[in-house]
Image (cartoon, rainbow, N blue to C red; front, side, top):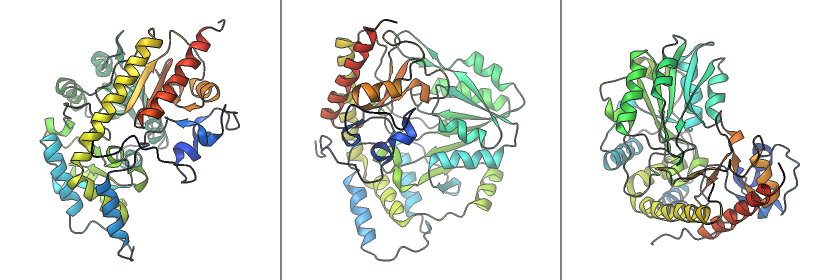
Length: 403
C-alpha cells in the first residue's frame, strides 16, 4: 500500500475528544477508575479515525498556512463546490445543482439548523433506531418530539426497515420530518435503491420532509457504490442531503460540511440566517480531498475490509454466540453480546473499567441498542487486535459470573 495505516499516532494532549475528553462524554461516572493510565486506554468510541489524514489534505493546509493572512473567508470562486460536485459525479454518478450547495460547520449543526428552519414546537420527527444520540438533541432542543421507527433485525445481524410500522407512523399529521441515516449508524446498513424508494414515497405521500444524513456514504466495503437518495428523485425538492469530507478523510475537527437544499423556501431561510463564512484551512483541505483524494480512500477501504475480517474471525473463534456481520458501510462494528452479558449492564463503563477499551454500549444510542457495543475499527490493526482481545476476555469473564 502507498499509505501507512499501521502507523500509531499519539493523540494525547491534542484536545482530541477521543483520548483527552472521554471521561465527561463517555463514562457513567467521570471519576471511574480504569485498569491503566488514561493515556494507555484504547479509544474506539467516537467516530473519527486514528489514522493520519490523506497527504493531499495536509499538503493543501500547509500551502494555505504559508499565506500569512486568515481573514474572513467565503467560498467565492466555487472551487470547493466544483471539487465536491466532481467527486459526486465520479463516486455516485450524480451532480447536485451548484445553487443548492451550501456550506455548514458540520452535519450535526446542520441538523439543528434545519429543525429550527422547518419545524415548530410540538412537531414530530421520525428516525430509525438504534440511532445516533445527537439526532435526539437536534430535535428536542426545538421542543419537538422524536418518534422512533425500530429496525427489524434478523438472527444473522442484518437489519431492514419495518415499512408497515414506518407507514403507520408517518400518517400522524404532526410528523413533519424524517431524518434518514444513509448509510445507517450504528448498524452499518447501506440502504438498497428499493428500500430508499419505498421510504421516500411514504414520506412524500404524507407531506414529510426528508433530511438524508449521508456522512458515511464514502466508507462502503470495497466494490460497493453509494446511491444518494436525491439521485433517485431528481425532481423532488423535499429531500435535503447532508454530506461531508469529515468522516471520509478524518477532517471532522475542521468543521465543514455540504448541505444540499433544493427547496427554494427552505434554502432562502437558511441563507437569511446563516452567513456562509468558512475556515480558510478547512476550505483548502476539503477542496483538495474532493479533487485528489480517491487513491487514499480506496486504500483506506481495503485496510478497513481487512480489519472487519479480523473482527469477524476473532468473534467466530472466541465468542461464537455473539451476533455480528460485516457491515455494508462505515468503519463501525455493531456487535450483539446478549448471549454473554446480563441485560441492563452499562457496557460502556464495564469495558472501560475491565479492559481499558473505550467503546460505546447500546445504552449510548437512541432506543433499541440492546446488549450491543459499537467499535470504531478505523485504527491500526495492532491496536484493533489488542483491544478486541481485551473485550473478548472481559466478555468471557462476565459470562462466567453468576447471574
